[in-house]
Picture 1 (cartoon, one colour):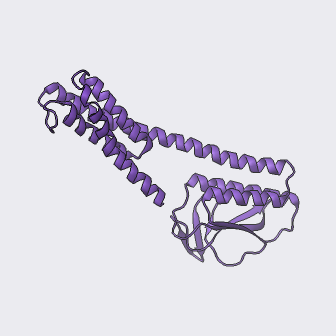
Picture 2 (cartoon, rainbow, N blue to C red):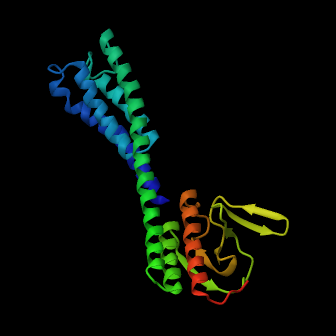
Picture 3 (tube, rainbow, N blue to C red):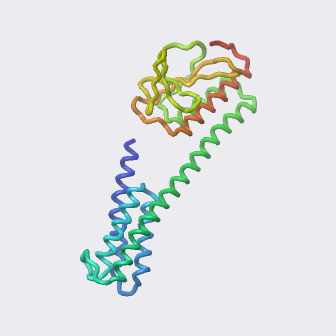
Length: 250
């Protein structure tokens, strides 16, 4: 998670600095450029920050852009004051357009991330299916799924355990939730619980074993879609074991 905090901090810093630098660079040309052209150039800086940052960074960039546009590019120069009515309108429009465009840019970036994630999930499922259909042994399919789970769920460890259930562990269920059932008490987790979490493997209605997931205590759960893909991968392993006709236990 520290990587995300560093990225967010860098994005917020860029939201303050980039519009300032762009407005400063326009100072030698402020008498030759129209107010509209100056505003458009500053908006480009807002979009650039928003495309790489967060919604908060995009909003901050829009505010920063409006402030530095006022300071450097409207009369009286080098003061946070605007003497001309047209300049006031331009500054307000710059702020409004900057806010709107920055939010659209962030939304578009997130959509691209979703598309990339969906493609990666589909690729993992297809690769496992091709291995099973191409005559790969059940053990090879199980190992392939184990490696996919490590990458998909960002696990520190993952192992497959054949046979009878030992212990009473939290479980990654078919709905993508992580639950622990103790009698009538049911606990649902929003982050990985302490220790290992099990993902049970069945095929043809028979229990074959489980993957024991070791993500690290206190880490947030991966996106629901990733957890559902993990369940689908486990089902492929169960189908391979059932097709192989291995001893059915449980």
